[in-house]
Image (cartoon, rainbow, N blue to C red; front, side, top):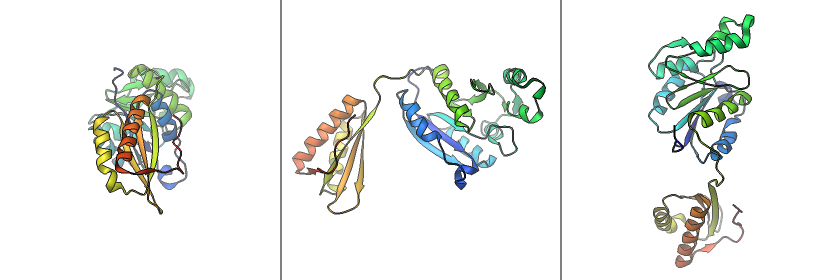
Amino acid sequence: MSVDAPDVGLILIGDELLSGRRRDKHLAHMIEAVGSRGREIAWVRIIGDSQAEVAATLRQTRQLPHIIFSFGGIGGTPDDRTRQAAAEAFETGLEHHPTALKIIEARYRELLTPRRLEMINFPVGSALIINPVNQVPGFTMERHHFVPGFPELAWPMVEWVFEQVYKLPTVTERRVTLTLATVGAPESDLSDLMQRVGDAHSDVRVSSLPKLGHPYRIEFGFQGAPAAARAAMADFKTGLSAQGVSLDSEVAEPAE
C-alpha cells in the first residue's frame, strides 16, 4: 500500500480495561508511533471481551476509511474471542492458517498443545502479521490488523505493519499543535473567525477549549504541519486584533 495511507483507528479489547484491573498503555504509545509516520489517531474504542460486542464493533469499523489496529483477545484461552468475532464480522470461517501453523510448530515443537493451536485459528483469507518477539503471528483482514494485548509483543508487530504493509516511512517534519489563549470574549464572538481561518487553512485543524472562571478564557489550537499551523495562528491573531480581543498573558504559547 502507498504512503497515502489514511489515519489510524484503535480498538482496545479486554474486560480488565473496563473494570479498571488493568490500565491501557497502547493509546499513549500509538499517538507517538502514528505521529512518527506522519499520521494521526482518528478514534479509539475500548470494549470488553464479548464476542458479540467485538463482532458488532468490527462490522461498524469495516465501513470506516482508516488503518485499524485491534489489541487483545487473540490468545489461546477461552476468554480470547477476537478471532471468532473477526470471522463473524468478515462473514467467513476459521482455519488453522497453513503458514502460521509451520511457524508455531517450529516455535513449540513437542510443546505444541491444542490451546496453542487455537492461537493460529484465523479467519479464512487472513494475511499474517509477523511477530519478531515470540514468533506467534497476528493476522490482517482488509485494513484491520489484529495483534496481542501485551505491549511488548504488539508494538513491534505494529511497526512491522507500518513498514511492510503500508510502506510508511518515519517523517522528519511532524505535525504540531500550536496554542494561544484569549481572555474576555465568549466563544460565540469568535466562532465566525474560527470558521474563516479554518476555511482559509484547510490543512490545519482549528479547535477551541473554553476554561471555566472569570474572566472568560479560551484556548485555541492550530494543528498541522509546522509552517501551515504558524500561518493559521498568525491569521487568527490578526482577526483577534481587528475585533479588539486580548490574548491571555497568563498562558504562554508553547514551543513547537
